[in-house]
Structures are given as C-alpha cells and as structure tokens.
Length: 377
Image (cartoon, rainbow, N blue to C red; front, top):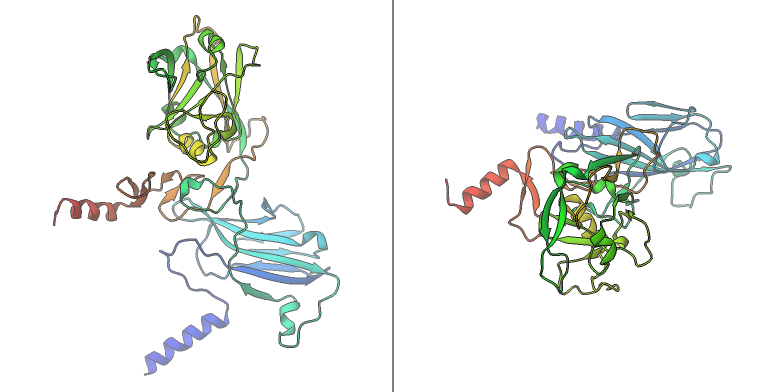
C-alpha cells in the first residue's frame, strides 16, 4: 500500500510540473500545440516539457529559422524580450532524433495584443494573461505532399541551395530502346545510369535538366526526346515542342513538362497532342525517387563539350541561390530522406505488401516474416 501511494504521488508531481511522459519507442506523429496570449512589451518564454532528450533542436518562426537578436535560445528554451505585434505568429521547435530524422517537437501560436481580451465567465483569467493552454495538435503543412505516400505532412525544406551536377555524355552508353507506344521498333539512344545521382533525383524537383538536342530528336518530334525510367518499370518522357528552334534543351523538372509513356489506359489524366497522358505529381516524384536510367533519343556525332547538367538541391552554398521547391516530410518511424523515399538504418523495404512502393520494416520483423513464410523455427 505504501509503494502504491509513492507511485501515485510521483505521477501527480509530473503532472503538476507540466511534464508529458512518452516512450522512447513512440513515433513523432503527435506534437503538442499551445496558444499563448501576451501584452506588447512583455517577455515571451517558450520551452519543451516533453522530458525527452533532443538532438540539434532549432526554433522556427513562421517556417523560418529564428535568428532575431532579441531572442535567446538555450537548448529547449526560447526567450524573447519586449515582444511587439510583429512577433505574433507560429513558433515551432524542430529536433533530430537518434536516427538523424527531423521531427516537430512542439508548436505555439503567439498572440500579441495591446489589451488583454475580456475572458468569458466560465474561463479562468490565466488563459488570457501570459499563460499557455494545451490544444490538440494541428497540421500546418502543405497539402501538396508526395512523401512517398507515407504521410501527408510536409513543408518546404529549409537551408537548401542550388547546385549543378554535370555528366559528360562521352561516358553515356550507346544502346537501343522503344520510344513510341505505337511503334515497337527500337531506336538508337544514349543511356545514363541513375547511379550517377545515387538513384535519387528528389532534390531536382523544380530545377532544370539541360542537354544538347540530337539530330534525331530535332527532326522527329512525335516521339519523346528524353526518357526517365525508374526501377519499377515506370517511364516518363519529354517531347520537344514544335516551337523549339535551338540545339540546346532545358526541361523543367516538374510534372507539367512530362508525359506518361508505358500506360495503355490511364483514367482521369489529360492527353496532349502526342497521345501520351499528363503525369501527375505523385507519379513524377515516384520516378525521381527511384531513378534507374535516363535515355536521350539519338546519337551524338561528337562528344566534345556534350554535357548533360542537372539542377540539384544541396546543403552547401555554391553561390547559385537558394532552393524553395523541395519538400521535407515528417516521416514515420522506419523511413528516411526528404520525401521518406528510403528506409532508415535498421530497417529494410518489404515489397510483399499491398503498397506498390513496399513498406519499411525493422530487420527483426523482416526476419520473423521470412521465418513465417518458409516455416522456419
């Protein structure tokens, strides 16, 4: 009885101190949200009370890294002196877990007013005066997320810069491939393996692909000039416009510039003048995240100065400007990458699932699944 009383008292103490006890194995789907009401000129103090160890925590204001000199950041605490109405907005604490995955720890909507609003009779005054009220977690992310179909919560990635990756076409492999859905005759082309970009072109979204136009591509424009093929058999292509009159081509790396090639029946899509259906964002990003090969129709008579260049996003500033078109997703446990496109350390992809992209499961669970499949004890 005495031991039970001690445990109850410990639980009451944690609640009184504002701590939220969470398991180390808990995922990051829930992040507490608060509403804070302040008078102008007062001090704003925010802190994380989840009682969890945080790695590389950063505070953000309205989606941007907080760098205001009036604010002092000490690990999980944020203190801003003498706030004004310009300081009202959304504050978020983002950290990295032990698997190098970024996640939202907590968020707060700060309201700064000249006068404290009159509270309703049944609500305590403390709610309106420099007090925090816990509210259900709210999604404040873009609704146009790819995120590999894992989650619908994403934002534009911060602190990414444009870089240009060049590939000398003299290293491209001459090969043959069918470039038309109506003509099964293989045509000569050059192939660039996706391994050149690590099999992942997610950060190219919103940039440009540039390369010299071959004679075959320049003359015959009813077939795609370039094809992106992924590891699962999907292929998308870009057709040279009838108005294009130069020997250099810049293709915008967005879904609106590409057409689906290997689907005989695609419902709900718009066909263009080339007879190939329009690619949606999910399909386009799926190809980028598992890129297998890039094909350019035709041959280069001379490889001198023939270069294919791809815009990519990088954490290093090379002086080419910032990138604000690449998504950053709040992935579930087991997934990694800006778009949850790969499995994190200790997990592996299991393709024997309903999902066409498979799912990332722990190695121990994968081993148990294999033993069940082959009746191994």
